[in-house]
Image (cartoon, rainbow, N blue to C red):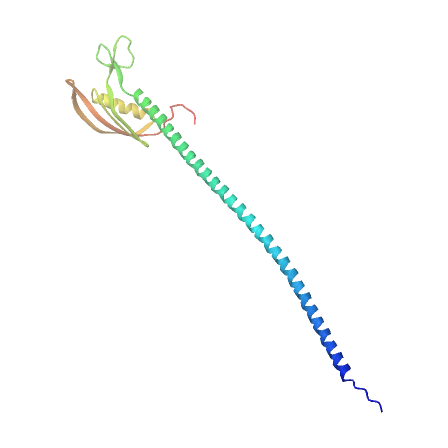
Length: 207
């Protein structure tokens, strides 16, 4: 009977199987490494792209912030200019109001002529004009007006107050003080009048 020893063949086959398994494992590792390397390269490329986008966005953001600051500066300067313009207009209005107020007040000052009988007359070409009232101080704060002056007599002051009320530009005309004042050997009257202005528009003007 012939006997064949199969041990060397089995050992060789086993070694071959081990080599195949090692080869497959090595190939699998190589494939996995290649995949990881490819994924890493792709991920790094994505990260680089995102970093570039972030840097560009930061640059644009800084640019917009500078532009926003410039816009705020311009707005602030414009507001300051607008406020100054309003103040100037307000001062101009007040100045014009004061000029009109004083001009109107001056027209109400008693300036009569004395005729031969000694009575007052508003117009008499044959007589001499005599000024009977002078302002020494004129003050306007808002609607409150203070008038100080000197008059020839009590009647002159009373007539002046009557004209203030009749002008329809002033109300609450009040005589605070009326004192005797001697000037250049003349017995004059020192007065202090308070009143309120109603409107600075000329009578008969349209709104």
